[in-house]
Length: 375
Image (cartoon, rainbow, N blue to C red; front, top):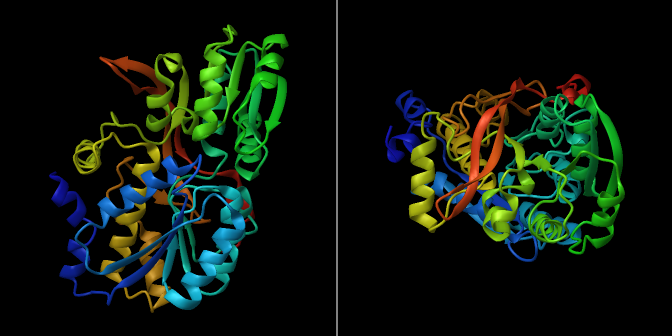
């Protein structure tokens, strides 16, 4: 399958059936400045690549600066002034909690390319909210199972905000060992001297941490220079391509769980990786892959249904009729993914520090909160 065929595959069948939509206006609020900018830029660029040349999708992009109040103001502007049909883009769970419920309550569709707070997966689920990435607990549930056989005591660390709390909850839900310590840091923290001292003094056999973006870069550099030699692991957010480029060799050997990797052998993935690198001059991250899949999902629904016919458009989204670069993909009862999760290891490929898949951590994984969703 060529890259052009990959982009076309989401809409050819629907167009052949004569179901052409009038167009969809999309409001993307994401983080484009500050310490978390790399994540938002990758989501944006992946999405743009997926809808490139699609005249039926109009996109308005704004920077939330990783601030909930800014995100709320931008959402109000997009809904009231820009008259968007669909919203997407938010990286951080605290921002998602500030924006998503209000947007869906006003009849807008929200497609999450990243944040997956548990509060929106269970009792707070909504028929117009579709998560195209993961529920926050997912990667750590898979990691907890995988590490149960090899780590006796684990030191846990994450930022003190909804995603950090969810991710640690997911790990503890499945890990069959002992938790030596559980530490929550400030969101955006860059100095980890105190936490590393705690790790040194603890009797933990391994460190499991979640620190996305610049937080993960700061911690890993400080940890590598500390002399503490306990193995480290975590969800992919702490070991993704953008982070590895900044950390370098210090990350080699670390294990992490993810639903995607550049070496994942599924239809369309190699073409996506090559096209992204050609378009932007860098390798894609999981955030770019999620942005790309979100764009493909939207294009598939827009090709089959008019967004003004909410029931039909919602059904088209639920069908998830697109070729995900992570392989098989479907939505569960709460509009969150059912998907495989892999174990990756950080390796050196020539001068490049990157990830490779070393096994499957969970098959057809779905989140535990769907039982509380009454859609």
